[in-house]
Image (tube, rainbow, N blue to C red; front, side, top):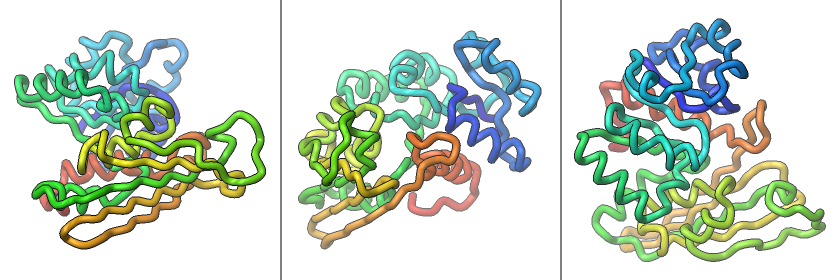
Length: 258
């Protein structure tokens, strides 16, 4: 499978190292970037081709596009991408906007395309999807605990709850920090019924996500402690790994949890 990546930041670099250097059957062949000069070293280093023109990028020899940029890139580029290619989208906060989500759903149907949303920095989404498929979820809560310096500007001595509300409001207030709430909302009861609590903790170095789900099936709780990506302390290691997991599931003849 040939992959085209949008972006050239920490996640894109991680994917290049893991996929191209390890010579798997999934190879990154193309990168779409804004500044060719800034990233031209990547062409020789990873034997890939850089594009600054989206149309040329989409006509390259790629089977699927992986977005590894940001919410704005998704809003600007995804509508055009899915007219020609399937896509893996990591900056799923863009899908919290009802109008944009509707536009994407209509375009996917019209063009007979798919987008794939990695689980990112959390887990348990298969259970949430299974239960919500028959409408048997009563409530869903995501509690996220992060190092204080990633959430607040002034130093604090004790943990502080800095947000309590819906997943929709959480992504509006913390667009770079709470993509996981959108993944959970899309898998389950929606943006307005998924509750989120965000805690700034000066005593932790890692991100801790705890998901609680209650319904007719019973009750489930998942806790995931995330270490940051070694090359970027603001990026979840698990979020980067989840992209590779998604790509490998797409190429596997045995589908688990479908």
